[in-house]
Image (cartoon, rainbow, N blue to C red; front, top):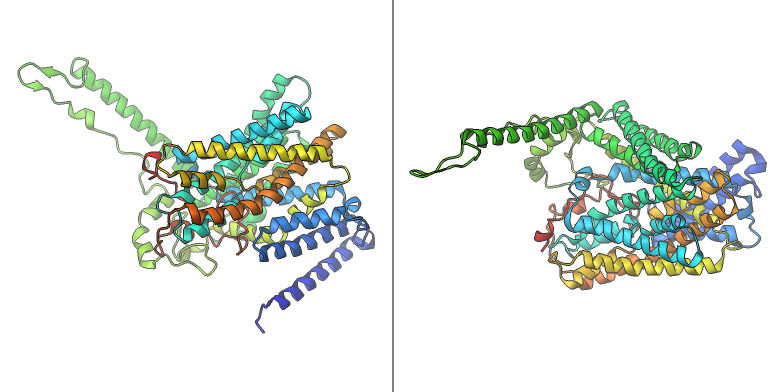
Amino acid sequence: MGAWDPARRAAVAAACAALLWAVLVSLFGDVDAFPGGSIFAVFAIFVASSALGTVAELVGLPPLVGGIVAGFCLSNIPGTGLGSDLNAGLASALRGIALVIILTRAGLGLDRAALVRLSGPALRLAVIPNFVEAATAAAVLSGVLGWPIEWGALAGFVLSAVSPAVVVPSLLRLQDQGLGVDKGIPTLIMAAASFDDVIAISGFGVCLSLAFSEGDPVRAGVKSPLELIAGAAFGLVMGLVAGLMIPARGGGGAVAGTLLIGIGVVAVLGSRLVHLDGGGALGVIVAGMAARAAWDEGGTLRLIRAVWSECASSACGCCCRCCCSSCSGRATGGSVVQADSEHGPAAAPAAASVEMPPLASAATSPVRRARAGSDDRGEKQGGARTPDGVASAVTPVGGHELDEEGPHAGLEASAWLRTVWTLVGQPMLFGLIGAAVDISVVDLEVLGIGAGALFAGLVVRCIAAFLCMLGTGFELSEQAFIALAWLPKATVQAAIGSIALDTAVSISAGSEAEKRGLAVLTIAVLAIVVTAPVGAVLISVFGHRWLAQKPVDDGTNDAAVSRGGGDDTSNGAAPEEAIADEEPTPLPPPSGAAA
């Protein structure tokens, strides 16, 4: 019998569940921790979500589907009483903490360089289908249900985000088989996915602020972007503080991850207390991204110096070129190149071709210095990965090699958060989301209209994604695959789908706002349950039919290495962040070179 055969795994899981319940009884007593208490309701939903999520994973579905089904069944099956036992405030706080975990992972995994360079097909794919789908869903919900336009747009942005949790591992499997690799199709989609999520979360934040604003609409319109700016500024400052407090090497993933979770909880839950709800989610992402940037550069102070040097270099180079051009013009009578009637065109002054050396050389940034000299080492190492697949044996991140000065704080934090998410955050979030849907109060007419809005948005999104790829050199079948791969929804819908309801409850916005918030959550759950499994199947089936196959040499498949050990599951359940945790995915070539 194997050391970890299924029977033993099940026995250990049952023993852990029993021990957890005993701990809860010891802490909270027999009132809350026994059947009929709110603590027991949370415990039952968590255990059932974990178990059914494992079953879903075994049959090839994302575990989030099993978690939602478990929570929904426990809350709505007659006789269980868990739905009424669950404390709304406790459930809202736990969903917020789980939201912080997933958004922090997204921030740590965002490739800053990729976002800066995002252009051409990837930029169009990230922006246009997102806004088109959000506008379509908003028009349907506002027009048919009579919702205010801000509530319709809020629901539209909840639905418009694509889910890397489903898309990324499905594309990585195709890429490992050489499907679409020749034209960089998997890379194109994955590069655009993270920016798509940022757009959706930012748009949602603006609409959330408008939906719960009171008084002058002009004032509300000004307040909404200010909330995003405040959230992003808070995240930036706190992320840099985290990069200053935690060493870039050997700081400990648990310590760094716990600090970032604390920052995120303040951003999400604290923003509700000060009525700046719209910027909380964005603040968590920015905090993770800023901390990762600081650790990549070897510390916050090094990051600030590197950014300052690059800005000074760019400004100096621009001024130098302008001055040289002006001086050359004056020296030649107003023209850089002046014709001479006897000797032909005069040579341009030598000063015009002189450029000041950049202030920030390759040695300025530890990251760039390490990367510049790492090619030979990478070839000698042969791209070998550590047992958990996180990175190569010598990964030049933050200016040092991992095997020389200890593990990178960002990678350690990502790995630790991945474990926390898989064991705690994922079953807790999806189980509580499923439990929040009370079928007895759900308006079936609203649910039907929501399904229509979801379907209309998906159709329009596919058309928009297909049209965005025109003129890029892709075949029609490849353009159709890109459009289909842009369908699945899961993590963002789970992360922000309940925020409107939680906000309405926390600020006592009234029964009408709570009813709309519940409708938004119900539509988000419907989108997850329908599109996550269907989207995964469509990517697999049509990827083999419509994408050209090219053998991929071992050690040259960058995206395979970029998985970062990274799937939360081994059967297609994706890493639940907006982008792969460890190594950033390279961008596709410009549109003219896509083919």
